[in-house]
Length: 299
Ligand code: KIV
Image (cartoon, rainbow, N blue to C red; front, side):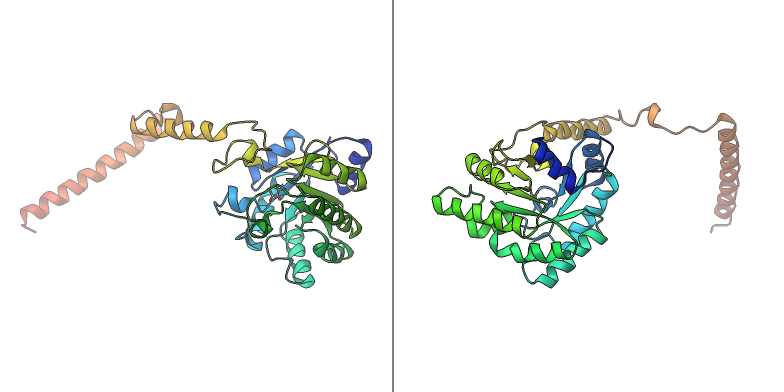
């Protein structure tokens, strides 16, 4: 349990049929808690644009934002494999941009690997990164950076042609050298078929139990993102309610004068306090005498 998780650990888990547990993290405390809970791998997903920064989509997320969040996560978690999303247009524009962006996430962000969205068209990018010594995770199916092409967050691969295309995408990403593949929002049977055909592990999100591992957005499973919750998410906590109740209790305590209590105060020793009180009193007496003199003079 103490050994660092590597891409080989994930490969071995697939071979042994041991499910891989992955969640997202964007900050230090969450990363530390995930590490303590025994998570295998953490994704610093560009979903942070929506669940942390409040954007409508993941598209406004920048490299600078990703690097900052990666730094916080890598300070918090030491054992899990940490993977960072390459943000929108940080790798689609050219192979050189892809190399530069991935290098920043690894060198400045401190992550172990990067994730790119897309199938066959993105395979040359995956190959270029892998050839440069960068571990790459693929992501097919409902790829949020292409939300406008899909016309919304919709299940993918539902027709025979779309299913064929997804299978071809999965093979193209594996052949390009990716070490694992996220499969999002596709029918469970299709995800199982892809998982059985690939040698690299598949990590499903809304893709059924037949994948080699599972990932969801941590804010969704904690009930911390209230705008919408995808049907495939199981809520393990209702933190929105817990936090809102705590904030309301704090406001009520402050307004009622019940916080801070004596136990939250810092104390002075009686000796030191009488010294300060004496000094303050003699200063005040001198000031009062000066004031009285000036009054007499009519100043
Ligand atoms: O950005 C993200 O969190 C993701 C997961 C949903 C797989 O890509």
